[in-house]
Structures are given as C-alpha cells and as structure tokens.
Length: 280
Image 1 (cartoon, rainbow, N blue to C red):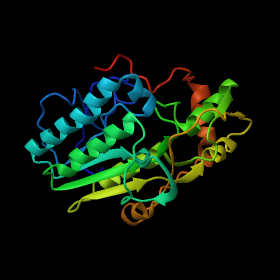
Image 2: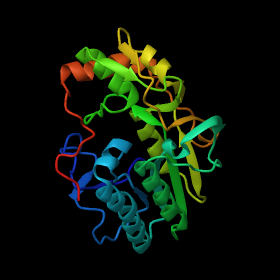
Image 3: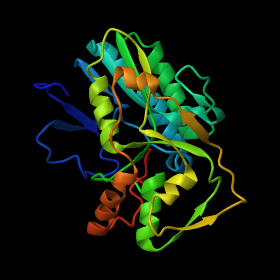
C-alpha cells in the first residue's frame, strides 16, 4: 500500500488466525462481509471468498452465498461509504478449456462452481457505481505462506515429494498459468494505486504444461492417469499486466526449496485450503 496508508482487515477467521493476528501493520475486525456494513475508505480490496473448485464443490451453498451475495454486500457497503476504487481478485480459471492463447477480451467459459461464482462476482463489480474498479484475474498460486495451501499444483507436487507419495497426473499436457503468492500480493498493492478507469487484468508469471511443473520437482514420482480428464487448459496473455503493473518476478523453479523448507520446518500434512469450521 502507499506509505502512510491505514489498513483495516475484515475477516471472520473461518480459516483460522495464522498470518492474520498480531500483525502491527493493520487493524483487524472480526466481521462477516455479508453483514450490513458501511465501508468508508479510499480503496477496498475484496478478498473474502471460498476459493478453489474442491472447496466450493464441498460447500456449494456457502460458496454461492459468500462468493456472490457476499461480493454484492461488500460492493453495496463500498457504494454507501463513497469508496473511489474497488479491487477484486478473480481467477484465470474463468477461461475454461482453450486451445488458443486467451486475453482479457476472450469470452468466459467457467467449468466449475468456483469459476462461476467469480464470474458473477465480476459482473457485480462491473455494474457498480464505484468510480474505479480493478479486476485481477490471478493465475494458480504457488509459494510458501503462513497458511500455505497444498492443493495448488506446484505446492501439491512438492508436498507429495516430501511425503514420498506418487502424483497421479491427468491431462499432463494441459496448460496452467502460475504465480507466486508474493507476486500476487504485489499486484494487489499496485492495483490499489490505479484510478480513473476500469481495468480487467490477467496476472501471472508464465504458462506451463502440467507435466513441465511436475518435472521441476526433483525425485517426484509420477503416474500418468489416462482415465481422468481435466476440464481446464488455458494459456493466458499477460501483455496488459506488463503495461499496467510490470512483470512478475518470482520463477517457480526458484521456489521449490522455499516450499519444501516450509513444509519440512512446520509440517503441513493437513489441507490448509479447508476451513476450521463449516462455512454457512
């Protein structure tokens, strides 16, 4: 954020407090975004969501309520408070299965509930009366963090290597854009300084076939699974990102040791993508 900015974080702590509490850089309010709020701020970054296809499929009603109705509630709160800039992290998985490279003008073809909720969330953002809106379509994340998810492709492969498991790799030639979590955070900060227009921006480091990501992890045991099909494969253009935000700088190959070290130092055998309590 800009130097001198004051930051308030609204969170239900549905996923626990790791990385959130005891941070001197912001004030924390334990609040559900679906409650009646007035957000009086220059910028709102709306991160609250159930994220990922597996989690949304497990809790479909909560996913719809939080990701769609929650987004609507936050937008209305921002409108009431006179917010001038709204930043909405979305997902590149909106593009579905595409043989050609896609960009921000490509028609959306979500293939799962999570992507559908994000598409509808984007629609609410676009229809709002807020002066400036920035939608960031993020690539699949990787990298160590206080609540590191092990259901994301590179993190999952490294965790499987550490645990001595064999990865069942289906549709090995399917494409994925990927992005380090630090680069995602930087993109959100940079987007918070944009104003005067409405933007949709794909954000990622690069595009990789799934088999290429697997080959990055030394000594990973791989079993090609022919019977399972992947409904997503997309190569994403980041030209607009380069113009507006600049390049992302953290390569996946350089992050293998970081991810493995985090797992070995503080074993994370539980799935950190799962909430601590059942979402409603």
